[in-house]
Length: 592
Image 1 (cartoon, rainbow, N blue to C red):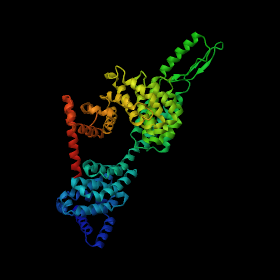
Image 2 (tube, rainbow, N blue to C red):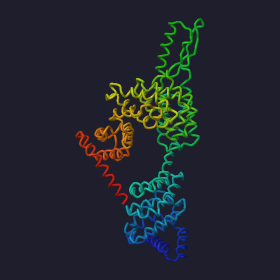
Image 3 (cartoon, rainbow, N blue to C red):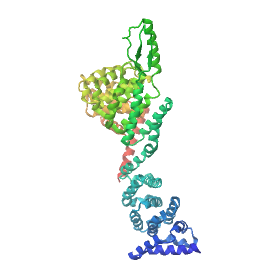
Image 4 (spheres, helix red, strand yellow):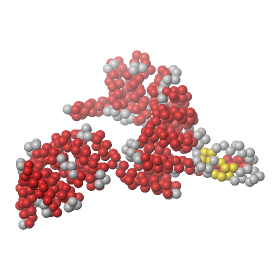
């Protein structure tokens, strides 16, 4: 009976809240907040729609329920748990079916306006929760409310994500997850704003927990294998962060760790104690190599013994535990800060330049090339400060017998052509013969060598395209380059090479067209082969450009007669055309 009486009182309040008389509504709202039954409000909300005697409550206007919800949440917040409140919200939303919410077209808009007027911080979680439930009820029809609610929703979500309150953050993410997950095609204008809100939230665990814990653990744990794993974990965490998201204190701590390990790397590793009658010396021997000891006037036997000992020490001291992890951290920091990382890099440069010294073992030279490639890519012409060392290191390592080191040097050459500027123009006169020698080796096209040959072709392409100022006989170089195609393994190399081929074709370069368009069939074959191997996707910018070239060639009836494709190449080219047509139709439908 008591429950029924409570329901009657609650019903009276609902009627008053929906009154046309503003004074009555205001009095009802004030009265609701002062009710001695505040502690029972949650019980009423959760049970009122389950009471068989009040089943007709479903007929109450949706606006009525929302007004009750908005008026009550501030009071309820102080009396009930978050779990209970969320259940209450669910009951209200479920009580309002789609027909009553969407029925006359204005009710839904009124409920949205009412909810959006809520400014109490304590109500934000429940407002977001209610909106998520309403969106679920309305389904695709919720689209009509987007212009009204998305601005306030994103604002409330921003407040929630910055609040530090787990419940608020969860409510905000739940709302955005539903909207962008279920109604994604309706949200193109809000994506960028939402990403700006959500990406900083990814910093939470790193900044507040993982970052400080990792940095501290690296500093205090003396075990090298543990330090190696921690440094690797740290680099992986950094790779996942949004751009420029580290605070200055954390960045300086990271740089201090890298500097400390680099300095430790180059400290003397071997002391040679000789008798007074001979000599005594300390040799500064790094993990990557050793300086000359020829200045010591030792006997031949002693020199031979020392050489053997130093060589053995150097082989053991190539630091596979720490050094690659440090390079990984620097790589991640370049990715985060781009050219803004240059001042910090310059502080570390004296230690990093030692990696490029000719006498160092190839793993260290490989890691050194890797980090200086990041410098070239992200800082562009600013790498000119190190031009002499860079050019020498690239020339030395380009034909290194160890493939990974050679590949890093070749990639550095390509990056230098694209980003280094005219200050390196004369260097490419030296690089071109080296690259040609790699590509024109008798076994260059063997399967086992393509991982070097194709990057060399791509690097040659970048030189021809971006930095050919000091190269002579350019036409001959382009003709040689064209004869090296196709690319059959590396998708990135293929994209670079075929983009340039299309550029030269559209510029009607005679070395590409051939006399009387003699090369047209070959060009179509190259393009069909690239699609056959799925190195280029038809709907990518490169794929579209290649299909445009095919279309131009196919407009030449004589050229078409000379085209001879294998069955697989024909099928691949036809499929690429069809996929592009399907994408075109789909994009047209989206615009409609």
